[in-house]
Image (cartoon, rainbow, N blue to C red; front, side, top):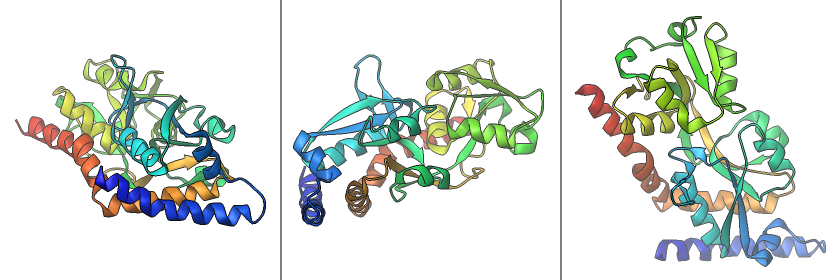
Amino acid sequence: MKRIVMIAAVLALLVNACAFGLAEDGETGVLDGIRARGVLRVGTAGDYQPMSFLDPETGTYVGFDAELAEDLAAALGVRIEYVKTSWPTLMEDTLAGKFDLAICGITVTEARKEQALMSSGYFGNGKTVLCRAEDREKYTSLEAINRPEVRVMENPGGLNEKFAREHLANATLIIHDVNQEIPGLVASGEADVMITEIMEAGFYVGQDSRLAAPLIFEPFTRDQLGVLMPKGSEDLLSFVNLFLEEEKASGRIEELAEKYIYRYIRTGEEQEAA
């Protein structure tokens, strides 16, 4: 609680500075609107373990990014309201203003920055392989996966599908609408490989001994996760960037990473070594 109060105090200075600058032009900024409303609207697909996942049993959002979003709302002094989006409609919903910002394991890309605003990166990300444990020695390169007999399963509309189409044109691509079901389908033999991010691969290996992530420390790409918001939200972007720096400096990002990612990766490594 003390950490949140301290961050809120620091960020309040930025809020006041932004509000002062905007008031000179007689305009109301995005931050002013959020604080006046008392609600931060956060877009999320809710299907991405361990980042932002809608728990069907409790009806609540859980994960690294869910807690990060709660920290952000607390720093703003408002409550959080989740707005459901999807990977195919993420950019469309962002530009339409259906929410103030989106936090759900979103990779910072130049294409996204051309259309909208993205914060500075707050956590390392990268595309890697999720496969059955018995195939951990088989799928250790793009060349080994990029074959017609290899079934690659991805959810629609996100960067995983885009990566598969660009780099695995010879493989058999299967599109499955429910992202969180794909690891289980790989484990049961309905598909051979899922291309996904380091954190998702590590999470599912830790959950299911039938799965392996042989390239988890040697991903195909190295990127950063960021917060997405529409253009015109520059005052909110400045606030978010400062907030993320405070979260890093306080050790909060590492705390969340340990809770939701690293321990699952270690569990998966122990299972693979057994």
